[in-house]
Length: 153
Image 1 (tube, rainbow, N blue to C red):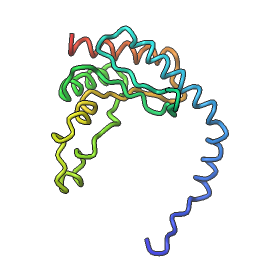
Image 2: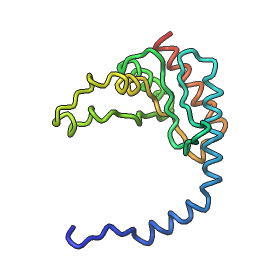
Image 3: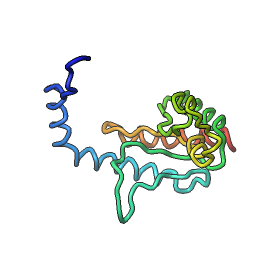
């Protein structure tokens, strides 16, 4: 748009200010969700849980990217379909750049990035939102476990 300076509208700034005020509260809630997921999957040999806190950094806890060890993209998709049929919304948030059509046109090939593809193929993002209740959280964990076991045994 000619002349548009990309300024933030006042309404978005107002929403942002409110969100900043409650960020600590939201962060603690998300952190408790992450801890529950990690504890819920700790005895599952197939689960590779995300590293979200180290001595140098701490996550913002916005995406819980669970990875399933030793599976293909097709198996991951099958697991996701089963989870969704059980009433839980899951997604894939990590997609390597070579999978995007723009980069494919530039000659990038995902086969040149096997580690990126392996991480992508095994990743399932679990729900992390403020109003997620303890009962819902337990349900997500159980439905993920059930679905993985149904697919990989």
